[in-house]
Image (cartoon, rainbow over all chains, first blue to last red; front, side):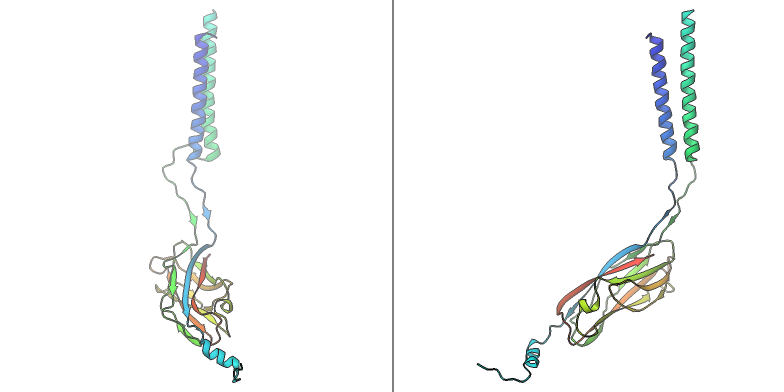
Length: 70
Length: 172
């Protein structure tokens, strides 16, 4: 292969690479497609404090007036 | 003579390469419609999106047994999309599980925090999504609603002490 052939193939490789680059560049300019979004979700926390049940009165109710034995 | 033939070969190879480059550019342009530099473009996003501005609502004080209490703190919800939305709300579990006893309930009362924001429903929260607001607008001055809560603790509630539940809002 003489020097002229080498230059020719070098030139060919360069322009092919430039062409591929150009193709990719033009593809990257494509605008974003319209997007339709689905439902969006958000969360929150609801907190509260409940007064403790009156254990003594519940025990009293449960005993139903019966006297303790033993 | 041989030199001339060599020059001709180089010329042909170069011409073929140039033709290939032109073809690649044209091909790319036809595929994408963007063969030329774009100077004006836009993206249309069809969005139904809501944002909770404060993520906690606490009922102050201690709720007595056999009492019904309106909680003082509301959850604020803003329509951050560009569509009128329908908002649903559910809690993690039914009131029977969260509070227990006979006929407990947590009511969500939805109000316009900015006038004309939506059409509201007041609901008793369950673990299934229910609509609390429809036609929820996205205009800057009419895109805000708030949730107040009323809790009924029956006399025979099965839980005591600090409680909480996760509320899930969905906008579509």
